[in-house]
Image (cartoon, rainbow, N blue to C red):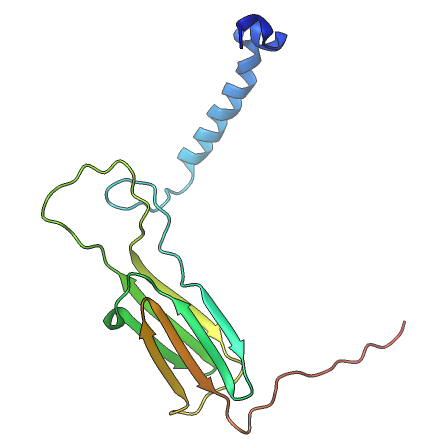
Length: 159
């Protein structure tokens, strides 16, 4: 595209860009005045380790939960139930090589995670089984016999 075919607004003086530059400067000033974002020690902007993605299926017996935790070993997982809440905690550690590397792009995430999942009932002590294979944690949680379904129809009055 030649310079002559550009819209006429681009062919004028830099006055077109002044409002944009002013707005950008105001935005950067605002960022400098706010609390700093917590960054890794190496200074890269990195997103925190995300919580594991889960699938939750309700069965006649209770719940079946699958959680993806790739790169986390069985020893690095902590699975607890507090009341009626399932808590998944873990940490994915970076395998540090003795050699220094000059990375140009780092997308893999490391760090700890915690995810709380409300169950809707308090399971019995021995009513939970867990299996871990290929980065997927699978839990089966039996619903107690005396637990109510939790579904209650609410009637709506007119007017």
